[in-house]
Length: 393
Image (cartoon, rainbow, N blue to C red; front, side, top):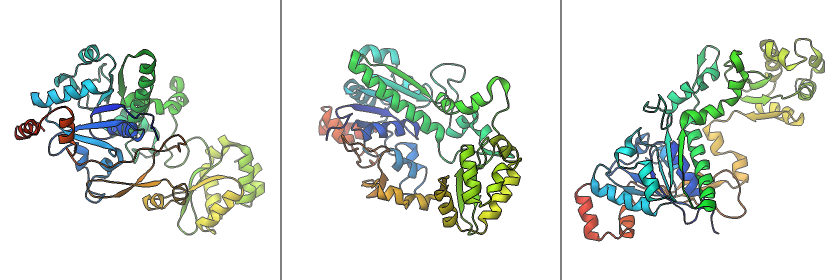
């Protein structure tokens, strides 16, 4: 089947998560993604760990279906190769350190003048201007700057997210902005420049707590895994040591919860709990009541009661539980892709598509496609050997 981005070429000067996550999703839709890496070590995310048959877990996740071209961009010959690639590309994306792309000669004004249909996308911590422009921004630092840590954790201690949400947010907005730019170019024939920052991406996700604290009002409290303003909404332990996450959204569900789950219908009209604001204020007393009931049930029995009452709930899974999740298996969401360490399982991208199949190709080794790409650009074997001898590739 024809994929939406078949025929689109993306050149990416990328490392870590934000830009690679963006470009992997473009590759999922059929784009040809040429990942430019340093000769030898490559993307430094390759060295984060060795958890997937000796390959880094982060790298496996965000780099399938790409071609790896090794270039030492400090050398003029390597920069010439990059220039030829950019001239043929539809999209150039980079998340290098602040100012690094410009030092390589990749100036926005010059590129757009020379290649008017090119879509340029810069992904950075704080954006291409402003007082924070040159400040380093790692995921945890951006979580801090965006206020995420102020609403996440326990009352006594803030906590970061267990995944790189600032990188992921920036990668998602880079991805959607590039798709939008391709649609716009289809109408006008003209490319565009996209400037995505991690701070602004995560700031968008922080919209609810920002408005909750509008005009100096108190911000949502840190409540661990419970909801800050709705109760009961959070984790509760069953008698067998398992944990069930449950959430009530309205008074109708509160009455069902008391009647069919706690088997205490009179509790629904208790003056301490007969409105969400009261339940939230008296959450410790209500928590003790709920845990007293759940202590005589195992996890499966708690879930059974909640399901019968149509109360939203979930098991608190670990990674083993996610790998083995019956819903993912039933919906046939797993595929197998190649990697430098051999075949590995991979989840299909979210969203079933009736019109096309997602691209699910191998994760590349460093420089795996260098020779093929150089030959495509017209370089002879002698030229390639000379570049390799000089350390340019």
